[in-house]
Length: 191
Image 1 (cartoon, rainbow, N blue to C red):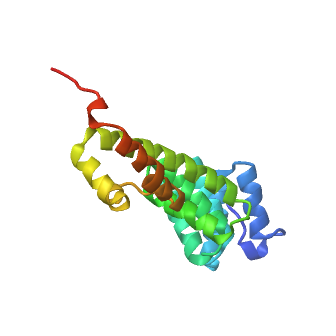
Image 2 (image 1 turned 135 degrees about the horizontal axis):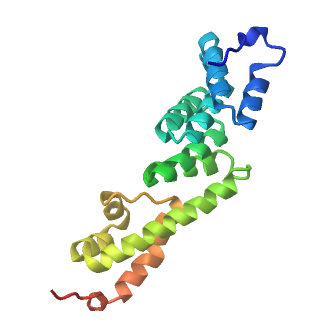
Image 3 (image 1 turned 45 degrees about the horizontal axis):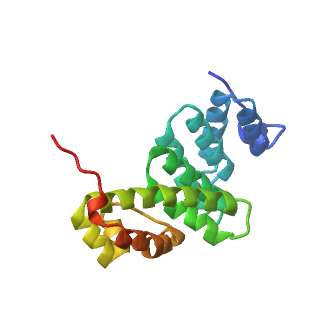
């Protein structure tokens, strides 16, 4: 096991050492130093970030998400933490939470460095969901009726989570397509 001097005894700051361990992909070094640093200072933000990166490298997405949740609790106004959490949620298939976090990023800093990639991700997630909503509405007459009556509520009831732009597309363009697309055009399968 790697032994590391207490952070107060190191010639470099804990942040510099964590950055070095992460850059050199020394996961064991990250774990030892970050845990020791957190033992001395439970609110040490760089340690949570380094642990999250290390857990992700090991493939433990759930643990990486726990570290990002801790980061957001300690530093809630940092869009980088929300962006990383959104990416992990998307990676795990939790589209609803990913959309919420990407929307949060854009709302925090509309012109910040994470806003454009967050908008791009939201667009991709919205288009994917809108396609699924359309297919479902064509195949399922009950859903078709529900989506025409109250599109946002019907979509949410089926587990879809759209961004504000996606909701606008749903209530505009997609509904227009559904009203113009006769139900008889759907595929019919015979046994």
